[in-house]
Amino acid sequence: MNSRIRQILDQISALEDELQQAVQEQRSHLRYQLEGKRVVFEQAIKDAHRRVKQGVFRWFISIRPQNFLTMPVIYGMAIPLLAFDLFVSVYQLICFPIYGIARVKRAKYFVMDHRHLAYLNFFEKGHCMYCSYAVGLLAYANEIIARTEQYFCPIKHAGKILGTHARYEHFLEYGEAENYHGKLEAFRSELGEEERQDVNF
View 1 (cartoon, rainbow, N blue to C red):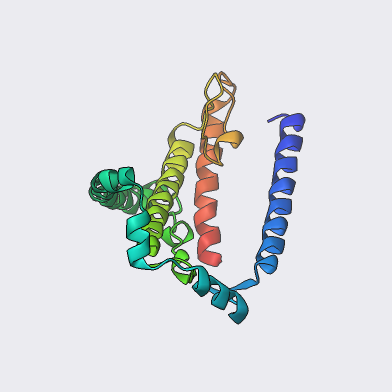
View 2 (view 1 turned 60 degrees about the horizontal axis):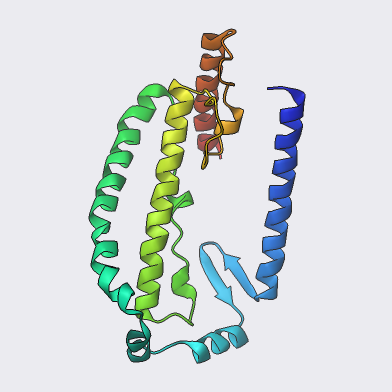
């Protein structure tokens, strides 16, 4: 990786830190704190949330017809999502220890914090939890696949592709043949070091 690319990646990292700081400031503006996995709002904010909460009956009569019509399709996706979750979890459970790859921790990807929002009714919270599960599952699976790709084939594509995982930018350039197998072993060793860091953490 040349120095210019490294410099840009460092700038991206600095911007991500700046973004986190801005998010933290936004949290203080909305007057909530994170206590472990719990979200705690000030009492005045909780009261304001309860005042704007829409009752279940009013919510049902205000739903767009297309939402009702597509609901069986949306919730029907729960079955393939659960099957995918099972298979990808079993895959990493069996294969990652053999390869020496640190296992992806589910808890880092599945966040179900919308239940703390008092302005959502029971059904809205259910929808939010379903979406949070699906998004978390895809992020969890994406990291499992990213670590697998780093182990077997840490090579970028010739053209630009959308939606790359966080590890992709550190992969070898397309056509970078010099000492490929030595570099591949270095990528694999990094995955083993991550496992040791997780244990020490």
